[in-house]
Image (cartoon, rainbow, N blue to C red; front, side, top):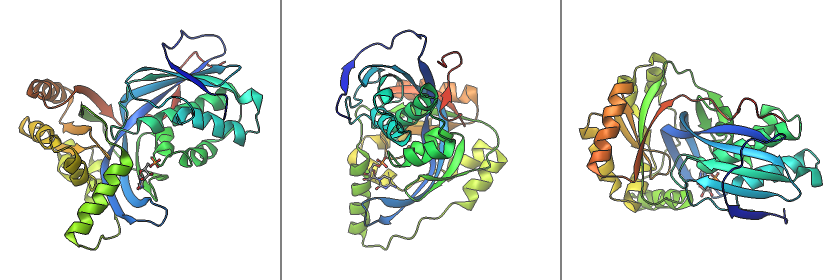
Length: 320
Ligand code: C5P
């Protein structure tokens, strides 16, 4: 796409002809990573869990494709923007030419390079919003296939809920999970680039000289999720990328320790980090944990969220 313009700006108020989609962040309840593949990716077995921290993506017809972002800083603007790439990919798949130009406004609450799949959320949001705006008629499966080409976590951002991801993470199966879970997320001061964290994971493993087993789904975690008991889930949270993220951001050890000392049922780096996710017994415990972690001064910001949250969904009243 060559006619992309970009700037920071404020999303306009809802206008006739615009479509807004809300898309959740994710945490990984399990992230097991295999050895590097020939294509540079790693096979993973992961349990994705969508949480109630949302980006909003609004699209409207335009002469030129553009993207504006408000809220969290650091989103790449221009053709590298995942929402722009998603709109272009759907326009091509739907055989649209000039009709596939679109103004994209992202209201960003999910921090960038945080291990929360914020970029994938924006891609998923743009796919659903443009599909509606253009009445392109792509099915969920079509959107997931296009999304998988944009990023490993995009199909999950479309689906939401709690799901097992295989392959690069893009092959999804819904997980049977009962109940709802209360989380505290602690945002890091600076982001971590996902490829750097995977590379650090490979280096740490090579230094240990151990063979890397094929990743496998934790049967205990799946049973705990079916029980709906956060006290059973908490100790089973597991992330193979955590040692790598901690090696790149040693101060995250303090963040995790603070949450554990304050009574979190589970404390884990989310995905490639640096966000730390803490599981609480309920809403009140989460509130107390959030206050305690804020007071400990071990992160940039703290939010309370619940999961599972729905995947990319149209915001009522904005259909064209
Ligand atoms: O798929 P996505 O674009 O989000 O991946 C970003 C980077 O993270 C990849 O280029 C790769 O370095 C790393 N990655 C990986 N294995 C995965 C997913 C991501 O090595 N399963």
